[in-house]
Image 1: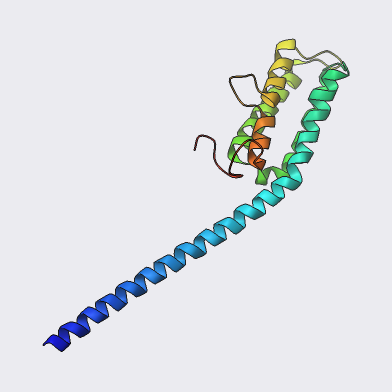
Image 2: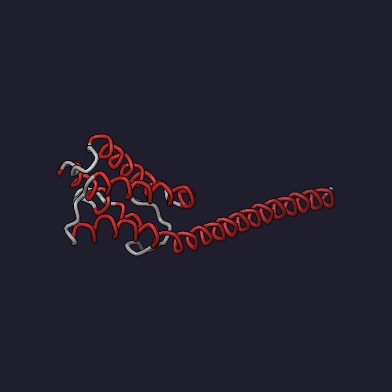
Length: 163
């Protein structure tokens, strides 16, 4: 009888160790796959985010510094470049960046609809567009989110805001 109990206990222990080993191996494989995927996404972001940054530098920072008119042509060009960029690269945006990007495009679309050809964009709308890009003190702008996604303002490169 003792031999039967010993065999049963050994079998149960072996099964438990086997199940635990399987679960640990599965967890480790999933984590390695996730790390590999995140690494690939970060690599792609490192490639594309500077291109998005350059669109904002061109149409916000430099445009403003050069005192160029923010007119209907400015809106059309800015919107066209953003839409083209999104077609090729939007898949790699973080959700937070995509939401801010969408907000920017919505503001540009509203500016386009309300600005007659050759006329200046309403000052409040132009200010709102700039705030979407650079923030307003209370909310992070698209530029901050770009940097966050690349790890510039975070200790972990793909950490989610608020965690």
